Length: 292
Image (tube, rainbow, N blue to C red; front, side, top):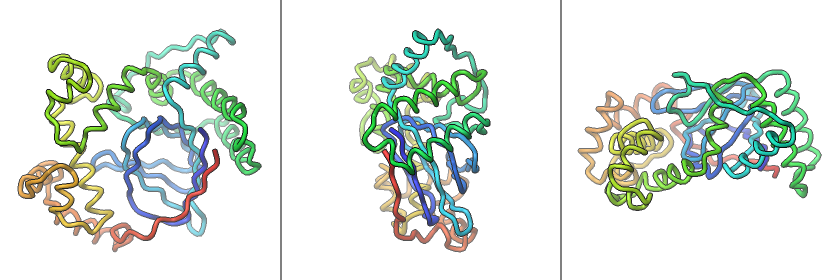
């Protein structure tokens, strides 16, 4: 449930498929979260929330010092038990009324940490160094409950809103089924059957969850993944198109140019020129340290 990552080298942008939601804190270095062609920074001392699903991320170490972060992973069921415990045992009034353009439709949130949270993660970091979580599930549960309390006891904000929204298990199941089919050649009608819904009901619920019609959303997700493959691998344009479920290369190039304003080849070359090969040439994966 509680993991510390230490990344000594800059490995470039990479895709991460999370099976659980995560609440993280950057101890040292900088984290980049890509949303299409836009990059958002998570700086040292910032909190972030990542929903279950695929994210495109780059972790950047400080000069001569590794990137470090701590992430708490949880399922909707675990969060539900914690919220119920806080409500019933401590009579907490837990409500969500926040809504704003900054977090609307996004599957991540970046938020500056306040003093209580900074102290919390400093303590958690020491617990990990002392190996207090490895064989003690109770200690993990207590720290997770404390983190949720610190967040939901604050005034409404993007972070609190996203975390409280992630307790919806029906939403979790629907979104997981959809995300599992991003690169699968399946019709919208067949996907609706996979979700046990009529086509009309599926389309309405899809737009409520993902804020776009199914076809448009799937194309965008596949192009986003193609973009990351262009700057993190040396695969050919045709190979990337096939991997992202665009078997017709000319059609793939046309869709890519419409989305990003340039062809895949031009995009790859421009990125390589801008970074002087720093990200484009992908080094061997650096070791990652875990504490659970």
